[in-house]
Length: 292
Length: 337
Image (cartoon, rainbow over all chains, first blue to last red; front, side, top):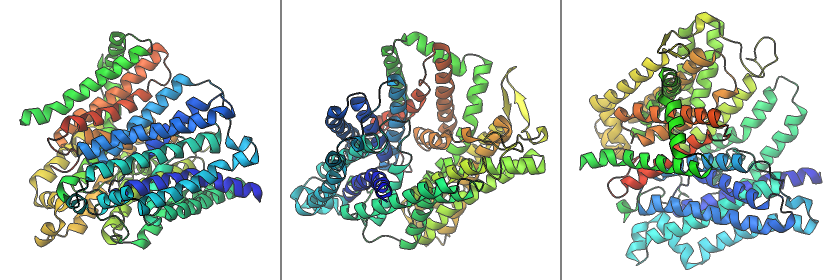
C-alpha cells in the first residue's frame, strides 16, 4: 500500500510541475509547445550535474535544471514576444532542437555513474521534493493571484490592450510569465532524473509535456487545478503499471488499453468540456500587435 | 524586397548549419571533413541520392498534408500518429490481399480516419486539434507496440513485427542506382504536393478555406460549409500521412515494426514550417531534412561517432529557429500568408 502511494506520488511529481508551468505560460497568453523539450533539457541538465556526485550534487543539479529551463524560456520569449513568431511554430522548433541536443549531448557524455535519487536518502529528505513541489504550486498561485507582477502576467494573457492602456508592458509581462514557466519546466525535468528514475534516458519525458498541455484545460488554468489534474492522471498511470504487470499474458490487449487510457481519457474529457472554454485566457495565442 | 523575404530564411538556415558543423569540429572532427562526409553521404553519388530520396518520400507526403492543414488554420501535429496507423493498415491489407494497391488504399483510409477524429472534435466540440492530435499520436504509438506483438505479429511469433509482405504487395520500383531502389511513393508525394498547392491557390474551396483560417465569419457569409470542408481537408492531410506510412511499409520496410515510429511525422511538421508552408518549397525542405538524416547517418558510420544522427534532429530545430529570427519583423512565419 505504501509502495503504491509512493509510486503514485513519484509519477505525479513531474506532471504536476509541468502542468503548473503550462498554466503560467498560458495565463500569460502563450501556449508553450516546447514544454516537452524544456522538460527533457532539464532532465539532462540535472543528470549531467548529479551523476556520480551523490547526495551533495542534488541541490546544484536542481538549480542547473531550473536555469536551463529559464534559458530556453528566454529564447522562446525572444522568438514569440520580441520577434512575434507564431508560438506553435517556435515551440515546435525549440522542441526539436531540445530533442536533438539532449540526444547528442547524452551520447557524448554516456558512461558516467548514476544519480542518487531522493528516495535513497533519509525519509525526511526523500519527502522534500514533494513538499517543495506543493509549495511551488502554492507560490505560483500567490504569484498569479496576489502580486502586481502576477496581475500583469494575467492581463497580458487576458487583454494585452488593457494592460498597455494601464501603462504596463504586455511584452515584459509575457516574458516574465514564460521565464517562470521555464523554471518550473526545468524542475519538472529534474524530477524525472532525481526522483523518478535516477538516470537519464533519451526521450525520457515520454510525452509528459504534451500531456501537460491538455491537463491545463482540466486545471482550469489554475495552479491548484494543476495539482489535482496531475495527481489524477498519475493515478491512471499507476493503475496502468500495476494492472499492466498483472495482465501481460492475454496478447497485450489489456496492456494496450491501459497504456492508451490516460490519452484517451484526456481526449474524451476535452470533448465533454467542449466548445470555447470560458476559463481560458482571453488573448491566448493572440500575437501582441493585433490586440494592443 | 520579395527576394529578401524569400531567400533570407534559407541563407540563415545555411548559416546555422555551417555553425553546427563548427560545433562538430569541437568534437574533434575537422569541419571540412565533416561537411564532405555529410554532403557526400547525402548526395555524393547515385546511391546517396537514392537513400536521400527514399527518406524524403514519406517526409514530403506528410509535409504536404501538414502544410495543407496549417494553411487552413488547422494545427495538425498528428502526422506521426496518422503515419503509424497508415503503415499498420498497409501491413495488414498488403498481407491479406497480396497486392500493393489495397495496401496503399488501406493506409490512406486509416490515416484519414485517424485525422477525422480531431477534425470532428474541433468543429463539433471546439477541442483544440493541437492537443487531440498529440494525444492520438501517443495512442497510435501504443497501438503499434501492441499490434506488432499481438494480433498482427508475424506467424512464427518470434519478432516484434508484422508478417513480411508477399512480393506482389511490394510497391512498383524504379532505380537510380544499383543498390538503392525508389518506389511509387516518390511520384505520389510530388503529385500530392502539386495537387495540394493547386487546390489552395486555384480553387474556390481552397481560397475560402484559407480565408476561413483568418476570418471564419467571412467564409460562412459566402455560404461556404466551412466546418465540413475543414473536416475533409483534415482527413485528406491524414490520408497523405497514412499514405506515407503505407508507402514506407510496402516500398521499403516490407513489414511494420517499431522502427516505423522514428519521428518522420514530427520532422514533416518541421519541414513544412521551414518551407514557410509554401507548397513550392516543400520538396526542397523535405529533401534538405532527408539529406541531413542520410548525411548524418553516413557521418556516424564513417567516423564512428555514435549519436551524431541526433544532430539532424537538432539541426531541424535550429534551422526553423533561424528562419524565425531571420523573418522577425518582416512577417510572421507560420501564420498563413
